[in-house]
Length: 147
Image 1 (cartoon, rainbow, N blue to C red):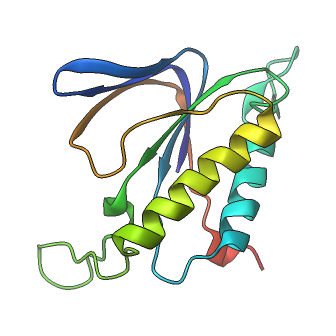
Image 2: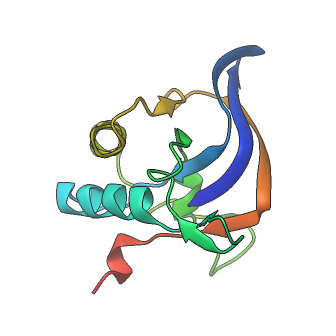
């Protein structure tokens, strides 16, 4: 899930860990069965998504074109199933090893595409995320819906 933000930050144990200005706050959920091909596709899609205003105020520019910042935070709760009962099931979420590897790979791939550092949270940590959603603009990108 990507959100266009005017600023965003991650704190851990009450201490600032990462902060960005104008750009994208990215919540990364890795599902069981996700692959490097999914990561590559989503990283390219994230960098190219035209959700920033051009000179006419039309959402026609990408984070890459605007030299925006990026902050990517792992969030397994995006994989929650709420079909039954009131307690979410996280059975669709990838296991720790796969999720960690693919999250790191996503950040590295996106950084390579953008030519600049992707700020991160800490995988598995209890984080406090703050952001100012600009618009608001929130887009869900699901690699399983690409074909």
